[in-house]
Image (tube, rainbow, N blue to C red):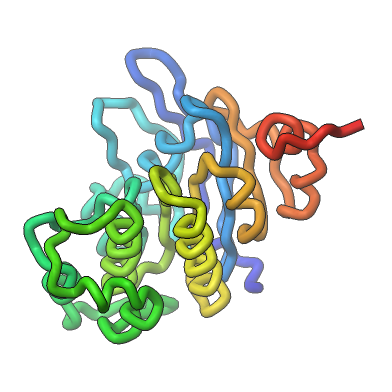
Length: 246
C-alpha cells in the first residue's frame, strides 16, 4: 500500500448557523485503502463526506483544506471536484430513475481524459461486478429495488473513473445478504486499486471489510485505528458489536 494519501482533509470544519457540526483536525485515505467512518445517527458522518465534496442541503460555513493527490481542491465547486475524481454516492442516489439501467451506465462519457491513478470501468466490467444489473438492464431506475439502486449508483461512479470514492450509508434499507454483497464488492474494488472512504452505520458489517475504522461522535473523531484493533476497543465493542468487554 502506498503511504501517500490520495484523499486528505486538514482542519476541516463545518458549521450551521454558528453550531459546529464537524471538527476534523486530520483525516487521510491512502492508495488502495478502505477506511470506514462509523458512529451513531447525528455523529457527523454525512456532514463529513458532504464537506469533502463541498456539497450540502443547507448553507453551512466550511473551512479547512481538502487535498486530492496532494492538490488543494478546497476552492473548487462540487462539479469540479467530481471532475477531478472525487465522487460521492449519497445513499445510492447517483441514479436517474426515468432511465434504464443500460441508459444510466451509457450516459457517462468515455471520452474525457482521466488523470494518473484513475481507471474508468467499462459497462461489461460493471455488469461482471453486479450480474443483477445485467439481468435488469432494461428496467427503469424507478423499478429497481433499494439494493439494485445501490449497485447501480456504484456502477455509475465506476464508469466515471473515480480517484477516490465516497460511499454514504450504502447498507441503508438493504437485506443482510445484500449488505454483504455490496460491501464485499467494494472490498474487491479496493483490492484491485480503488481508494474508498465508507460511511456506514452498520458497524458489524463494515468492520469485516475495512482496513481502518474511524469513530465519530458529535462531529469529532474519538477513536481510530486498524479494524482488527478497533474491534476490541470498548467504545466499538459495547456500543456497536454487542460485545461485553471486561
